[in-house]
Image 1 (cartoon, rainbow, N blue to C red):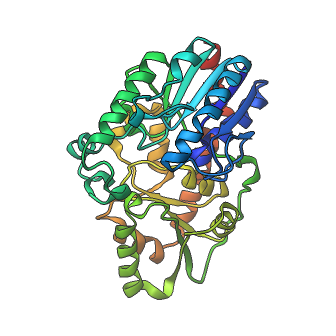
Image 2: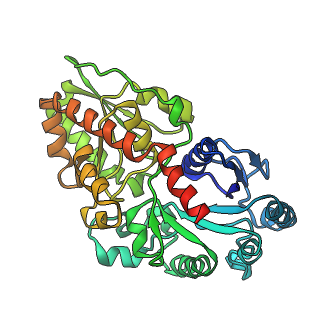
Length: 358
């Protein structure tokens, strides 16, 4: 069986999953439009971002040509981030290639986050969410038009897709009933080694990587750390990871004693998985009311594996940790058990392989 993951490798999920599917005997490849995220791919269609009207127009023919080639070569077309090769809602061509691909093989789609998440329903459902900030992602969702486009595209995938996955539990509020939760995979799982644990007598090394400051609630995190600096400044050091290559960031994570992910989204992503694979305790906000979407045992383990906080409780939890850093060892152990059980790409690939064969 031949599987193609396309047209983006956002978060490295497609890359990690494809490599694991190969271990199961599938021919599984990754095609991306451009190398914006620098995750491994078997084919890059363009050597520049497709982010201007002119480039979108000039890229249409190469995309059509690639669509025909892929349709003749592969049996399963696994789309990512709720998009496809020819996806131009502004031209009246949302997911225009799905009908063609559906005649050639199975269609699978994985939703990664704000490709399915919608602003106003999220604001109505929960008080803790980045959607409450009108500046999130530049305010693009404020008019409601992007949410309407998302709903139209979800309907199209519902029509053509043989299976729909979501990497974040809350996305399943917006997706068809047949959709299922799928744990993250990461692109360099086998290259990330478990780091030795050191009981520090000196300062705790705290790392935060605000890939999107508003979405991750970095303002709350940094405010709490500023308070901590005033009260316990001699007991920790902070590293903010921005504008670093993936390799540089991983090297810094290796030196951390505590990783702070986010306090608004309600779940975690590739960053947390990478760090937990190293044996690093991760502090994060987990929205408990969303956990009914994931396997029951995973939900139970999740509650113990993370140092769980909200914007209101993060400072108190940080104080607790710096005053008793031995508690980090317990979260290291629980986090390692959790990530090795639920995020091993080979285990996730067995889930997708079963769907491909079904």
